[in-house]
Length: 130
Length: 375
Image (cartoon, rainbow over all chains, first blue to last red):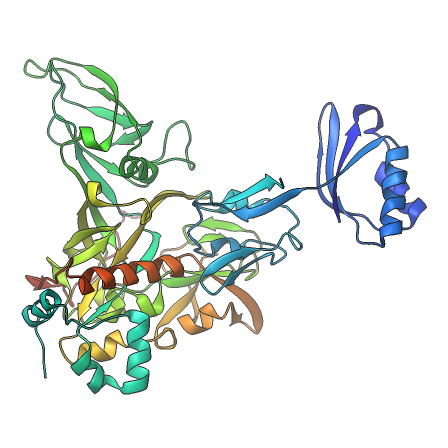
């Protein structure tokens, strides 16, 4: 499952994620990380049992991290023309041409944003899941 | 038995015309053979939809009071060319906005015009006794203009290439972002729907051929720039009325680190006049070969690695030096199919009659490189 982590300024200097990984013995895949003046934001993926995931989240929260489900989806909008160019720049093959239409897999997507940036028609969006 | 365009137009008027898209014709010829196709099929429709950089539109604003002779002008911050009469201009699709380069350009201005959106005009003139005004700024829409004519010096390349990159860094080209060490391959063109390539001897195509252009009925007005018939890189010059076009088939494009352009839906109807045309219009994706070119070396003559067919490219992977490489289109097959399909419907419903060109496209033209002074 994918989560959004928010790190307060006070804990930005600590290896929080590493400590959680070592303590819970559960790998955490970092999909995106941005460190700013006031806070750090990360999108991570935890692939483990439900119990283990709960343990990891509890551990992170105890360290002062705000944890929420990453509820964004990548999809094509009405500007997409199904040219298929985005399939060439996706590093994880999350986009494919099914017949003559482009299709996005949120399961596989790592939210690198290349398709959003490179689509000549501005036909790809990352939107919050309602 | 050879047919002619007049006979086909009579069948269009009577509703008896038999029209197939490029894809349907390939199937028909495969199943029934060229002879039967020549007898039974009257028109094959083709289509493509991709960025066509050598495009733009002539606009006429009408005169202000007092009148201005524009020397320089900008449309939504994109400089248009003025070098003709007072209020005539040409907006080219690759000219970029000064404030938002790469994001917005002449192609987007044309899309906005067709969509009916407001465009901001800013113009300056040096002033003459007969054109005393020196500045003007105003907002206008397509309906406020006099003529608004798309005239594209080069459209619809007969064939194009597949591109890849042998170097060790990503390069950003008009063929898209090409990943290092043959990380991907992109390709332009539509194979089975390809307009000029379905009549590669230009038996039916030339000056005055009526075509589908951006959702309107447009015309071929000559060979396009860089027309190169000897190696199947023919091109056309096309014209159409912006007012008759649709943003379904005309879209501004932003090509990362390359520039802006305009994607146009274009289709040519090919009258099946004889068995030769039946054969060429029956070509399938497997029959169309193009060069796989290495864009890594930025030279005029790029190294051709191999040739590939559209069938191989559409499978999603091609082989380069023993490595399996993802192959991805730049041209929208879905839109190409829609263009060919819509043109077919127009003809079947009697809304589109074919024209016979005054002169077919040149088969002899040689495309020369630029003459350069010694370095």
